Image (cartoon, rainbow, N blue to C red; front, side):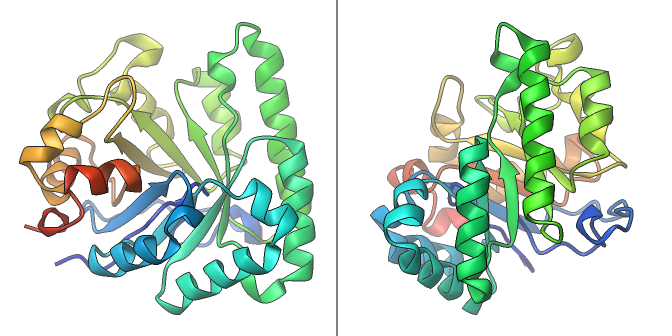
Length: 271
């Protein structure tokens, strides 16, 4: 039985531990049972009703929501209504942050709508893909510092590809959670994929015991589990990840639109 779940609509989770946002060192999760789900949504306002219906039916307790830029500028009341509706059904909405302009926009929105603040903010700056990696990582650090200054009590998260050990040490000291990209065609590959810095198991060990690690499984993209998910349930994927990556209690799925097209958000939500 799923007790908690997360739906990500381009934007974290109801944390069970104190966060760095409160100035208290985060405690390591002791649970080894995956019982929380996050769902990424590529364009939340394309079908907000459908997203929230799926969140309720499939036990997602968190939404990471993309597609916020224009509404935040032109119709912030629409954003506030979404956040409040989600909160009413115990779903946290996470705001993705790709640059300093989004930090300013979110800060203004939350000042004007204090009852509809986002539950978490998460970086969306893929510095590891930049040819000038050191400079890109400096921009990433500046972004996180700006996010903390703008939202001192909000849990901050980082979406990550493949950090070095030194980068991971800095990141772990400044965030409450990392979303770890795991582009594989079957969950059986989650712990065995890659070598060196690009090894999923190596990256998991960099953060495990320091901050919460949330693997992201993909239903579309360069390498994804779409074909596998046509034949298996989300719960089956979660059980395999739980077995291979000890300590994981939350898994994120990307994305709502692709999972719905696959039929994975119907009976496939549960066994």
